Length: 512
Image (cartoon, rainbow, N blue to C red):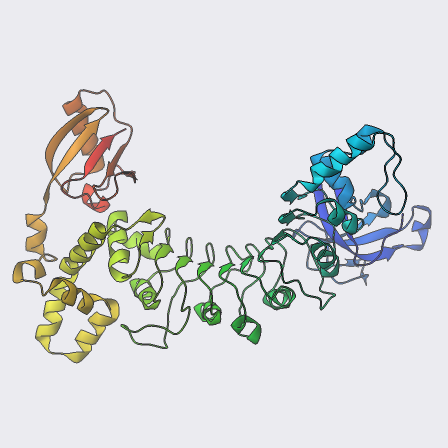
């Protein structure tokens, strides 16, 4: 059994498969000649090895820290051919005992009809998924001959080592437009291109930004690229980006975690980008310094959907910056630190008020009535501060207010100026006036209207509803709003006042 440097291999131990790349083949010590040669393998998963290619003070090869180990070559698996994997996944030709061989040899007539039925079965496959079958580079041409009508091809977790092998099979599949190569390690060894691939998935491939640029050159007509859980920690501008046809870029959960919004702005040069996914990174600030607080940025001219879940965004000014994106309609931003500064309902209102074009927030539709209510409540919340700033006639104070609330002047034009009572609603007197709220308490099919102080805590409210509905114990309380009857907010802290959850008159409190 021979192995070569650069070859992809698999090792099975106790029902666990480890994939890696051979970096060294040979003997470790002279005495090892009787045991046979070893392969030095750099494993795909970090920290699955014992060293970085050094053994007993001698360096045999270069590898990442703690990613490599030496394995007797007799224990390594080279994988299987694509045709063998296809047979195992979708049914095998051999079961018909017809002695059929594809290629240059003739096919015997015995069982010919059954054989052609099976070939026809492969030919009808639209979505071919061989993920996890450890497919190697052998037999890829034969695979292409068998699945001519495939439109999507998944070769994730394979032992294919080069992009040239991938392109060789793709070019023989005239209908394939989607390619999933997740959890592979492919080295760039070709300048060929494929114009048919529109969607490419490369999750957990250990790629860096330079690798992404090289990959984009292979697929000039690419529209969607999925790059979650890779090693991208910086993004640089290039002519490849500016000429790209990408409409979707997924950069969720990078291992080194993207943290610099300046790098993200480089993607703003993609002329057709509509969807950008950046969940589970370390982004803490959003800024578009190319324009003022009320301006429109030159970046991301067509971006309509943005996902920023589970980042470190901590300032409301960053949320205001998103209003500079002229086409942004769909935003996923929960959870982030900034949203924890107020109740969930208030946080939603503020985001809607700050980003004027939003139609969907955190996968929930923003209706016209919800936008109106959110914007008016936002104006009332900060009205007194605005009035004080304008009365002061201090330009710095006014500028500071508008930096924090860039849309406030737009809202004044939209709804008219605040009267004295509205402008004071953020102050202490307004808080006293609004301390009582009228809600509906609902237990199963029973409903009761009740006026409550918004200072009552969740535990006391539980005791109250137990008496009203004559129930022994209340485990959970939740509430829904008229604007979002399908979205349930749980009152999950017994010591918090219900005002923390921003419950308003007209809301329904559910006894679970």
